Image (cartoon, rainbow, N blue to C red; front, side, top):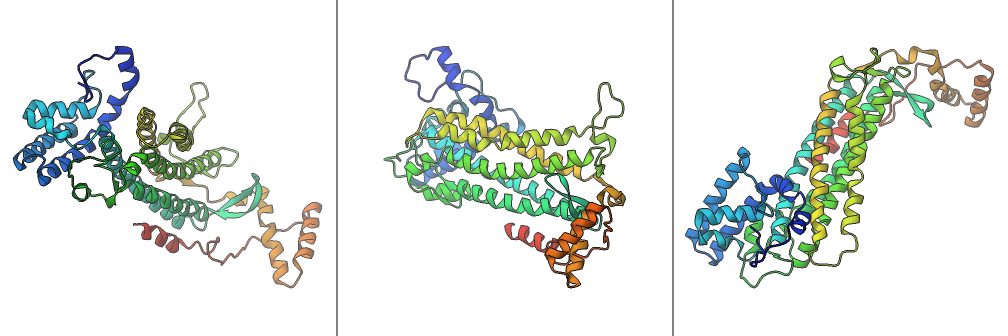
Length: 426
């Protein structure tokens, strides 16, 4: 069944190519098509385009479909092009002519727009909660290990003292920045496009403000052409927010892989969170973090994928936009899995508390030792030269009882202030 069926049969090759994997993706989105259809049916009854009884019957039938979706009983067979055609078929099968009236004053174009935006709102909200969970864990670890020193690097060369407190809370505060972008994407998605029909509105006297309120959108996407132009753009906005989160996770995963290396030996994990080698019995591989790194690097490519699909398309609907689902839906699932696995694994992290006892890290303290000379009245440039000569001649004696008091430094992590940033977002 095709909603645009005019009585002729499409070649099977054309049908297969144009439908693609829409049926599989629509199983994810069907819940939201039903939510929008319920709001639409109520609106049709409210404005008198169908009777109140017909509206109530449609809503009841849609609620039954929603139950089947929740139970995993909803399927989209090859006879149906997508979720829209299957849902309308089920309504017609149950209600006869009343079921055929559900498509009054709408198009598949605004159907998929509103379903996708409802889906993005839900998924971005879930991602937001997962970010908060990881954020809380990172701050907890920062507090627990705030006094455990860690080498800091520039150019991957030993640079200055850091700490596990700084390292964990750095990623926590970075997640705040990521969440700003996720929030912006949510706000863009939180605009009701239903009623824009094929992109040019309808001659029916529909009430778009009613469906906006009914579905829980913050506002309308008022201009019907702008609503249609939102397809792809809304997903791209979400992808930029997701990409920012993925960049943070990827960098954290890379640090973990590096720090687990025996030559660093800064951290470790229980055996059950690592994998082994088929020929090397000593191996404890960070496969989880390597996969997080790789998956998150893929996610960072998603905005560009979407740009390449939608770029330079003129206003109005184009079939190119169908491919947007194929990019954004799997990326969302991957990001959620990466957030879940990062939190799950980090709970079990074990830190080495004696890292800086190794003499090879003595040069970490050169700047602090130099600064002590400056505090005692030696001009900075003279102190720098003196320290450089001492290091060159092998006479350097590090001052290890360091004291960093400024905001955001080793001795003043500002964990509460970082938490307040996050709290404002919630």
